[in-house]
Image (tube, rainbow, N blue to C red; front, top):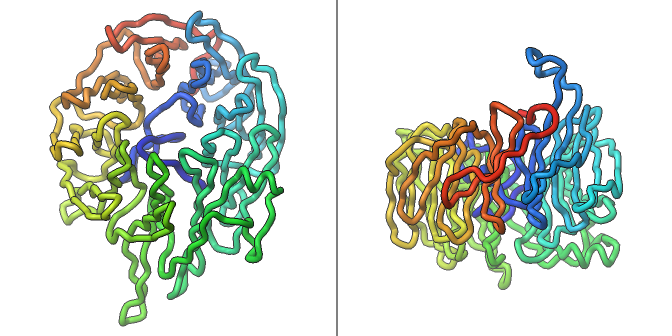
Length: 468
């Protein structure tokens, strides 16, 4: 199954109900699932996209007559119809180099619609006989990875964004996880073999997608794609299917690639015991090292020096963050004063880690990596299900329980920002320095200035309510 890239940030669905890295940050240009009313932003133009629905009867909102994807100009507030998604399920919006890609399901089969990102004219449409999930784009945005949700072992397809041609990643194992690097169109993968046997193993691989495409996706002698940039055998490990699904993490500079796995060891009674560990691959030297006991998914501090992980809960259900020196793999456990499951976010600016209860019902814990300081923050308990960060400002804006909050990372302070509307979703226009929010009580989209905490523009969608 396809997973996330370097996890100082996150993407499509907010899955923070389980312990691990938060998946609630929204960023312009990221793949966006639209079905819950989320706001997507094209980072090239900062045009905003929202899916809205018309219903026959306000008392029966489940009876949808029409679903329309609207595009909103960030300067004029002009609203245009981008796509008619009536009758479609699981709508997703991507921003490849070739335009706007709307992925949706019709009769439980995926449909790909590619639009011009400026004129919104339809360029190409493909109807498939399978269903996709888990989208992720390469850094050039020329390749898109998706998992086939209708086939055994969920094979991963790579879509060429300009032609919509699809290529199944070949492998001879039982399961495959894959991810693109951050700075090159290199696809890295882990293939698992003999998962239910006493001697399981895995294979770590990487390919240059551009070289593969130019060569016509040739196969090598073992039946996998030819000419891998690395190919390493790892004995005695299996995938972690409890939550992390062996999500592959990469440092911001692509120096380190991390594969969370479980180590399998046969006990004297012939039973197999499993323990979590991280496999850390040096991309340049191909040296492979282990961090026993650490779990995924993992994050990295912005400078790439520290892997952020966590261990098992203690007897009282408390958590520890594990800060792992990427160069030495020395582990610094950091107790977290939050009961039950946690989710966490690693900041883009400054080496800060924000830790929240998975349920969003406890006060946040802020850890300053540089100062080696942990603080339970005063103020409301909020979750990390919907938030954005402002580049260069060391601050986050969080929407939780239909309220807006500003978190000052440098000062370690969080405060609710009172509004005359009821926000459920948030995104950001980094060039224009505006937040984009919705209103749960109307069909309004609100452009909000975070500097003076004021509403600048309110845009009413022409029909319906935002899908929720």
